[in-house]
Image 1: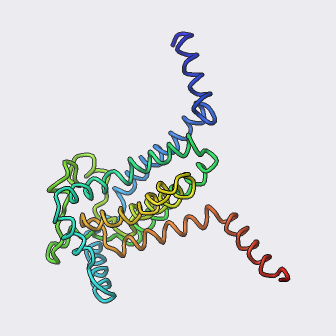
Image 2: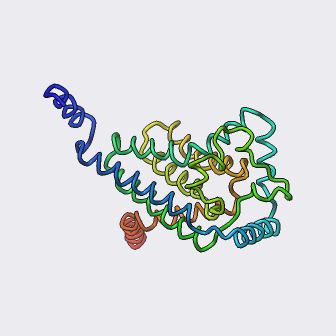
Image 3: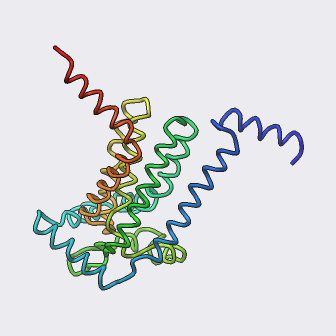
Length: 260
């Protein structure tokens, strides 16, 4: 690399990267390293088909007793429009990696003071979710055709669970909890908190609901999976933000004790 190019790279690092190229490279290694290890480990964990199907039947029976299989209603709604069916299919693929990765990058570059907690929240939720896959492997709705579920991705997305590297690195029985739901909640809450325009805050607050609708409409998750994913996000968030939560509780307690 000649002197001129070196100067350009150094200038870019000083102007656009909060802590320079070295820290940016370290964050890339942390993120992509975690992603690679997580995907491969997830692909090898919990492949007991009989147990996963039994757990899936338990989820179906539980949902039926509690209320209804809302996923079937969402599938019918998505099937009413080709555009909507394509939208939910691509949301399933893009929300977990592309949108999440871009959100991490934007926060790193533009709201760097929030980046560490955001990153750690996502990573911790991933670890907790992985434990869930090992302990409780669960087949997704798309494997229960007898109940009326349809695997939308095989019809309308050029990428599906049987595609090359996806089949190798994915775990077909990792429905519970839904990390799509967990990560979309983390992204939605974090960005709604740090963006400045009201309309952007509203869009990010709606993001988790749209992602949950999409993963159910594509028959990749039950609504109990999404509920469990939200619970995972809350657990991870309470650990990452424990000091802020403790300070908030102490502040409110002191305010309550102050004389009127």
